Image (cartoon, rainbow, N blue to C red):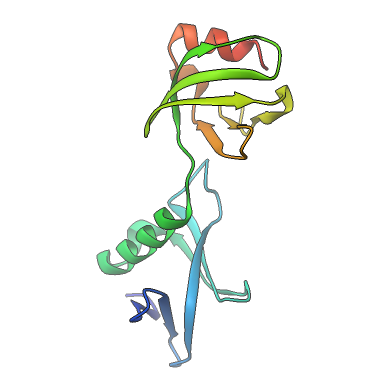
Length: 154
């Protein structure tokens, strides 16, 4: 059993109570490794950014605490995952990309090649002209045509 309590107040903000009874409102969960290992290493921080507790693994928490943390994270995080590159208008930038994501089909403009950043040997983050981040979790899982289009920008 964790040595803390986690609830939501009437305003929907997370409330943290430590083992000594000290209460912090407006607690924010932050992933330590959001791309490579999203369910490992979660910090709960206060409104000033000070870490209150480090959670090694979400799976070890009771279901209600895990649900509160996952709800809070999903309300703050927005990073569609690219599943397929359908079309790229040009191999020079700026170019318009038509992609399928885990949230549907999207059309966006890539301003420059520097907006395609390698995170790991096979994962990439692509930032569109509005600053929205798109994730390619593993380029090797993309279809052949998608890999070929992506290779032009690497």
